[in-house]
Length: 631
Image 1 (spheres, rainbow, N blue to C red):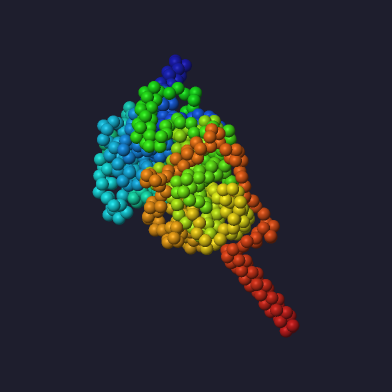
Image 2 (cartoon, one colour; image 1 turned 60 degrees about the horizontal axis):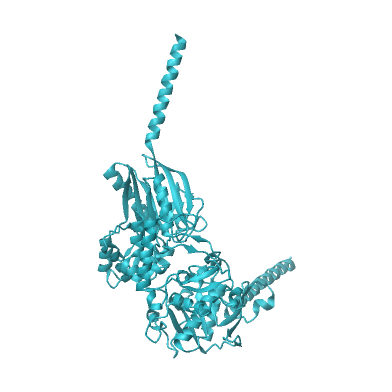
């Protein structure tokens, strides 16, 4: 009898354990998030500098469909900068191809990135209106902290801006339901992204403060309406850098975020960063990967990461036929409406390239002469001279405007546009201004001194030859600079002489702000050909135009230069040609060669400190001797 009772107790315990486990399992659900960011209008696959193909929306669609078969209740989201980066951006204001394509691919939510504002406030208004006008499904846009000023102080037409946001349905957050699981998705814009959108017309509210308020509001609304805690997803255009950065600080400071999709910095995190129980995820740029996050989610609001994966989107993936046809349709529209003006097509081969150019990461990584930067600035100079019919003394581009490399093999119009797609209000346009010789030297000094602090400020010039010692005093690193003429001869740069300088609008604006941002330590003030200062708000008046009044686009200058090479990239771009020499030396001769006021000021300060120290030591010794003699 006793044995029977023991058996019954064991059975009862097993049954109790079974129901306990079942109840626990019932309380835990699974949530899946599929994500991208920084797509930059890359509808088509890209070919990297090594000839490898990756990305493309038709391939991406195939991978998305495969994941939705595995996870039918998944949401699909994007972290911003869905536009600006390929020829499809030329239809941004008229057709909103990016949002319509994302709608066709089933994206639930996206947010604004800084490049959504590149076409200025009027361009964003037009894009939002165009996106809604066609009647197609488009993704929800969430944006909690980047909105027009209440009084519209920085907008010419704030009412139209607010109306466009309202008509589209832009919200702080949205709540999505999938088979009984609720996702609260909100958007946050970062400080660096704001710096990269100086003409947006928007006002940035504190990301951390706004994020916490938005989380509280979204969770509260979800519980009030549906009686459940949501999975909280932040679509952030703040960014991470080696696992740290603005999104790291956001996760650390804000309670209640389950996942941050971290856009803006084009980071690829093969493993997520987990901070304060928040998963920070990044899948790289241009649709190279589809990110997949699987969470276990309990009714009390706690979540844990089950799995994280970045699925490659490469040439091993078959294209989705429907999206492929849609991309081809968009491509035909762009060729008809835009490229026909230039007698160009997407796939027109401009030149065959036998040389490996820098990747964008390599352009940024170190101070060096880059053959990719050289070919850009040489193209600007060549095209400007042909258009203006006059000599250009120097042309310059910056690392920050180089968006892609040039592939080995055939280089097409599309490849060139992808590499030089950045613009202000339009595709990048070349401007012609004048600087004194002293200011021209200061431009080279910016390249030498600022790059370690701001990698996108590295400059790549044409028409000069210079060297700098990284061990020298800040703003006095350049120890040699000469003009290099088209025939290779060198000419002294005269401080008070005016020189014609050509650059893109982005670079022009950057150079024009140097005096203010350097607190007057360096002065670069663009002038007209007569030496009159240019109002930087009117820099667009100095865009280079052909005889028909058409502005000279940066991408077209490069495309024309390559096409003019007659079939193959010129052998001068097989290696650096010595126009920029970067070295490090503590040799006193090299440290003080051609020293300027900054070095002399430092030397004077050091000398003064040494004299003070010597004087103090002398006084101490004198006092000690006096005390010793008095005993």
